[in-house]
Image (tube, rainbow, N blue to C red):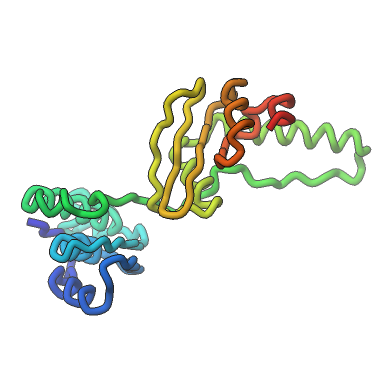
Length: 236
């Protein structure tokens, strides 16, 4: 079953009834108080019933669970942990119990987990010193940029960086990534319902990769600026 250690969880059948009345088969359902994850479960269940392609966004603060409660004892330290586990368990259960209907869905059954965090790009706090010459301030700026570049080089998580860059480029949260063969670099294709782009996070771009994009300007390409040398930047 999908029993979860949560006080007064909403009824799946009740939420399904509301969704069947208030939504159409291609709608996006937003729940700002996800709690035990009932809305996610209900959306997936309803899609199986009527062949719909509804999607959901569930938002839940990482509120701590009661240290003496059943949820905490079961290993859920935050309410959002319950939300995520409930959605994953619902997928497993529905896939096991109704494999034919799951296979017939318009989109694969699944979800992504996002959390608010600091940007992967270092904040800019440099300010010129009024007591220094222009050349001295320029030298300080170059040192500052090199330090920030090193921070990004050492600290970034590729998945997190790609997500942030794509969201800044207007991609939807449910974008998909696939590796593109035939390049001397690792190239990923990002797609959603409206956009497509090729992404590379390698520290250096091969000339063959640059040559490809020079002759395929219709392709949107995203890479790290430091991956290009001066000649490659000029050619692109």
